[in-house]
Length: 346
Image (cartoon, rainbow, N blue to C red; front, side):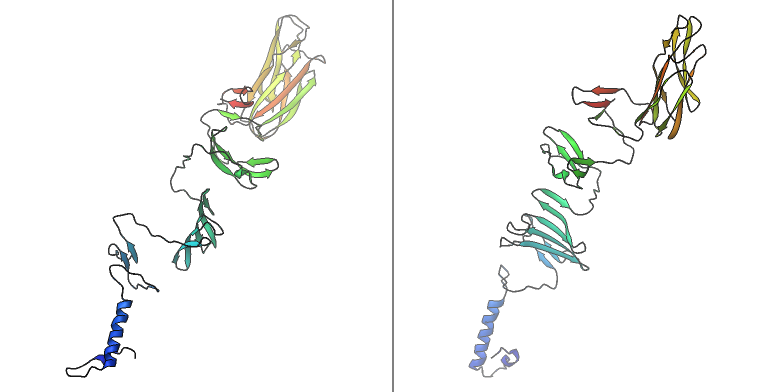
């Protein structure tokens, strides 16, 4: 018979029948078996705590579960099979984040994943190879340090559409910036800069330099007489006009030469001195620098200086070299074929 506390209540002098006594003994035994031992016990079924759960010390206000210990504190979730996951789920307002660790026998072994229900994917993964973030990575500080000093360059960044930054040791011994791979056969990577770039040291280029402001034009290559004119196109960079020619004078001991004009404005002159008359002399070859010229089509014109005669026995050239610089504050260009076959601008 089920235990009925109302039936068990007795007044002084009431008879205690054996059935009531037996029910009382059974209930006492049941309570003894079901109670939780405060010094330590095992609960075989679900445990529901409607208030705060505190271990080691009382829970602070607003904290639902609190663990406090003077020793190391560890919350351990152990998955005992070798083909599953240990998961900790955090849910707020329908948005769920799951922290999960895969067992060696699971589909993705030895990984720690952060899953987002709103993104419907793992947003971060940590494994022996490193950290993978799926999405934008924002660094709140101003420093990124590469502290591994023995890293060996890999080809992982050569996959189509990928890029890499490596602190490479070995034969490279440099911070490698590998651009986006746009071709794999052959491998071709691209790095683009849209802003001001300042190089505080030597610039060493081991391959080609290409720029819409880097061009070479043979504007004039003719036989005389002067004047002669040719055209060229500029991208708006600094121009180096390299000219040569020859001429003669009908008077002895005269300075002869030619004038160089860009779009009708004098850019400079190239000259020589003739001691004898009626003898063709080569003018000194000159390289004239012209800046502040707009992008577009332009003309270069060669005109004879006073006392200078030219005819079909004289030859004239004007070569326009455009450089991709905005000013002339760069040092000499040094060819370094011994070490790398590259070009160093100092």
